[in-house]
Length: 85
Image (cartoon, rainbow, N blue to C red; front, top):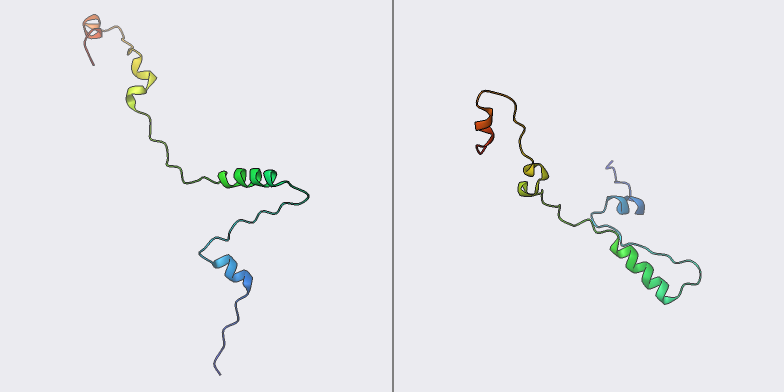
C-alpha cells in the first residue's frame, strides 16, 4: 500500500512561508482619524533596519594624532625630538 502524505495545516504554511505576513494594527476604543494616522506613521517609521553601516572614522580626525609623542632621555634625544617621525 502506498503512503499518502499528511495534509499540511495552516500553521505550517504560515511558519514556513518565505513571504512575511503583512503587519496588523488593531485600534481598540474610539480613536479619531488623526490619532489612527499618527499611530500608523509612528509604527511604520520604527522598523528602518536598512540603513547602511557608518563608515569608519578617518585617521585624520583622530584626536591622538594631535598629541606629540613622548621623548625619553637618550643620547641625541634633543636632536631626535625635532626630527619628523
